[in-house]
Image (tube, rainbow, N blue to C red; front, side):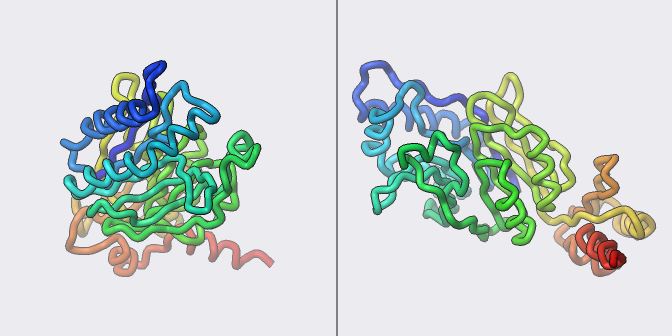
Length: 302
């Protein structure tokens, strides 16, 4: 599947403009950004945290903007999703029917419908002071036609990471104002999942493989990047698997890929064909996946 991500700065609202005009400005700004990646025909477009927050507004003025905006920008993105037959991860501050504010990601599907919502489980202190942003209580994994997707806004909370370790999503989507540094690679490896960051404000947004390799990134010149990633993969430790992995390569050649990041002791086994899956390879060659290897190692401890 092809994923597109961004690290753009927030749109600037014209000083003195009324809220209606600001909504139109920000909508135009977002659509212009998204048009940059549409030629890449992405399956998933990921926007940064609070992607439609105008720079320069705060407090009651910002809440007023969100009330005027309502679902209008989401609906504009739904049209893009439907026209381009892609998913869009739309992170924004939204007002729920119970008059509570949430920092959320709404996942739009290829028909432009809302396929699911993730509410930020761990808002930062400044968000929850004065009861501004309500904490989310659930962290669902969403079934998409290309794989299973989970969301996270903050990499500092192990309870969320460990939930995803158990739930085994194929892809973790990380829209944030916080970069996280090496934690991005750690989450990808720990969850055995691909990882895509969308970092607001100009810090690099990267795509990371399940063995912690940064495979694509925005640059100092471009605030967007699109990349094709292969979710049909498995992480295996090298112990007891080296000869089996070589046998796979000898039998199937370019139909498979074994990616070694170095220093880790684990590799990524990917199927590069529709003839068989990575799980088929695991069964055929009795590959011991990393989690099974670690479980077997633990069994030797008293």
